[in-house]
Image (cartoon, rainbow, N blue to C red; front, side, top):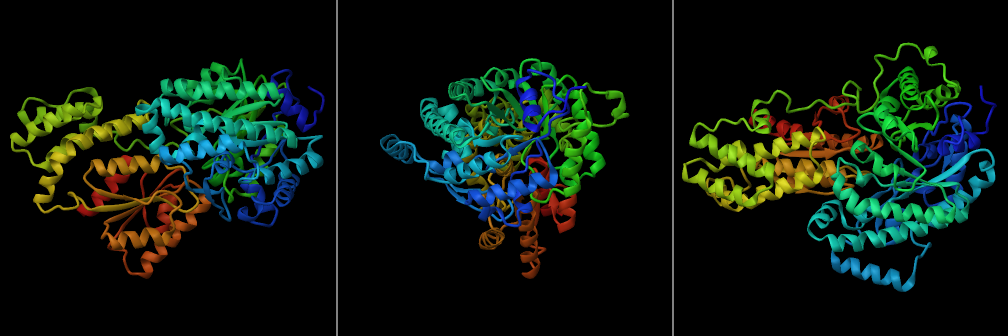
Length: 610
């Protein structure tokens, strides 16, 4: 058995893979959750370095762990460029205004930045640096001290807005490179600042390069070169740097391992064991524990068993640190955090795997049998299956029209969509038939393939733009038939207050539009009153809320209370979805849960039909 190490020695051994640590290192990821232990709220602590350091020290004393992390989030680079944030009491800040949504804004901001240089007085950099200084003095001798920094691609996306950035990548790549270059320069400067303050390492959070969002070839063209330049700079500084990417990253694992970082971390969907096989011999891994299910709603025993499974899958020969796959919520139970830290401390090297017991029925996040796995809402849908396999019935003229419209959407062929829309009308098909049995079925198929990681967010956007090519032909006919707002009414959609990760919300909007709904997208950080007032003003039939953090569920409850106070329960269908939403939460509030974009559309359509 290895000699007893300090937490700092243990982490460095695992990260550098230079030796086997004495026990399984653990990173409890006490960011916003640590603030709760300091007896204050996030909005106060995040702009007060001394208060934040106090919170981190108190949390460390209570729960333990091998790494202390300064800061809480990835917004510091975009703050330097003028982003406006809403500081919330029980969660990470929420971005409410992008600094460069247009080219005019971007060139103005870039020119000012280049003329004046990097300004560390903007945003929270000075507060985080002060926190690092205090933590380094108090615990730096025994514990690894790191801090998160938003990555270049994620920062670029936060500068412009996600839809705008995705469009830019495909339609204006030269401009995309300019935006990324500015983001990269800011990130470099922040890394230097944090090192000078005393950080041992930085964790570069670049979740927007996930294969849930960007196709691998797009990442390799735009994201990978920026990351390589950043990590080369960190190497010059003598600053160890890690890469954090959430969700589905298996197609780019080898790319991430080659970008110059010392560690890759996240939740490793769909298979931590596969990640270990693919890159675990080249680079250390960190993460894997389910933050939204196991830690939040599981029992201490659930946490213990999932940690042991992670140890077997990824930590059997070192090179692994156990950590939640993403930031943890303010409401994570004390007993689950203690189970995480205590279980890791009990796992010594060399590992006695036989002592862990039977792990055959324990599944990690990403596995189809893990509790967090969503049900495929189109499974068993004969029309979707036939469309995916190219086996739609074409033995009638009408069937051929539907099949060709589906093909047009799946092939992103706008001319073909227009051609077969016109042919369908010539045959006497109604505009509703063309939309629902052809165009929107194609969108549903692409959405289903996205849920299976067979297509990407950019593909969903291309499919939607293909459908939009045909809609000018259809919409006047819908209006003439008396459906001025389309065939199914208006839906108000947005991320509830405290939420800024809008990719899922944007997909729901795309699918609603594809199914004939008029969509009012309120964007991010939406207050309950804004949801309700907008729905009343526009005579909406439904309100869709995206909930990405558990502590934001209070705003869903507030909206439900407002609807009940106004006796409007029969007027609006209320639907929630997102990383922290589930059927239990929806049942608690008496509303509906949509596990994905297709499910959200089905719920609204079915309730209206009923």
